[in-house]
Length: 307
Length: 265
Image 1: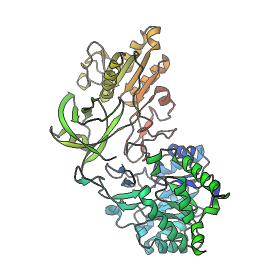
Image 2: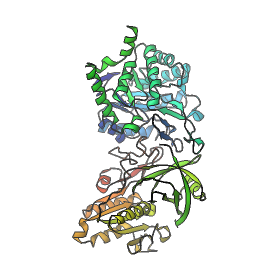
Image 3: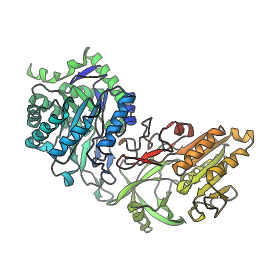
Image 4: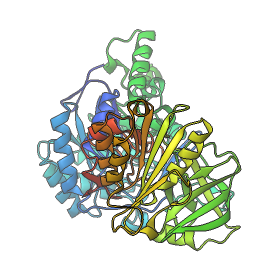
């Protein structure tokens, strides 16, 4: 199940998506112990943030909804956790940062790239901080390009993956523009904007009113986004994320064009050992379909279409 | 997991700034040591240890801190709140065992629930309650003849820490009694650390309720994960064994706040 991604060797293609569990070195390592091939740290910003008031999360039959508000201990405390992770675990670590403007993206990128991260994910697509940061950068080609250029300037040796949003109608064009601007990979997708209203209390459930939808309900949207990105970019690989809860889901994401597959809120339905379960199911899938190399799944559904 | 409506039935002052809230709520199905998330729409949602649950009502003992608890303290009987849960790993006991419950501050709340449940299973019990001052003692008269008090200032009961009182009590147990004794602990972490150390010294099993900043309450967000195991305390805990607690490098040392920053004890 080993797979290379931007020159980094992953034990398997299943990676912890940013924002779930991954606040500390120990919790990231636990995901590796439970089967993940790599982990993404919860996004860090220049200063610490407490995030939104509760409720920040709700789990339902077919979807998960969150608006945590990008809480994090700040880049310096985050760097300490990254260094600690690399002391206790050899698995690949994907760093993740966000910022309120282009210049600040450069600063946090420079800081996090001084830490031993293997890949850097740039979160330009959080749908839950609109009041504070205005429209996510991932909704506009110009903004995505400007940020890609600045983070590439400061990331130096570290490959960069731009995390895009399904809320943009033109995710394929945005991905292609990021590639042109120097992005090394695309993470597709972040959560989709959504909300729940509590019928008994006749009020929005989240304190932030609106949040991001993940879980099974997001999967068809994620598949289409990955499909579009795969068709739009020339060379760069995709971290396919959104609604994956089983090995079959992971296979579908890879068939659509994902090289790595992000898993996050699946923990809600299948427990923290979901990573190992998905890896085992993906192996089973490959066996059933006589596939020896996990790489042979990537983008395969596109070939069947043109044949 | 949609919140269900609970209706406030009764408010009872217990100690300085501590009030018991009893809610009408059928079939919570909780076990001692578990917690619920209480939601006041537009204000906040916070975790609370369950202090009692009889299938028709449940209670929590609330210490007034800030916005959310201040809003709770303003509620009148008949008010509705949202409840999710119960969540977390509970206390466990064997029938006919000897329960020593050690509560500090408002930690007596889940322990009272535990003692009442263990009594049904013919357990013997003693309740040790500590606070800085007698006005801060929670449930000092709930279990008459079985309760031992400790105050830092000597205003009631033993003059000193409840964990020193615990060591006194444990040291006089007969060998036969020790074999069936389990310590159950809930309180400020440094007190819990001292209690776990007493348990270890006397070779007694202990169960400790660990408090960490909880956001989701069901093991997703990672906010309450502890070093160095990375286990979320909202699902693996709040109740873990004293041995387990003493293996956690952060137990009695530090915790993380809402942003995830380390705060030393």
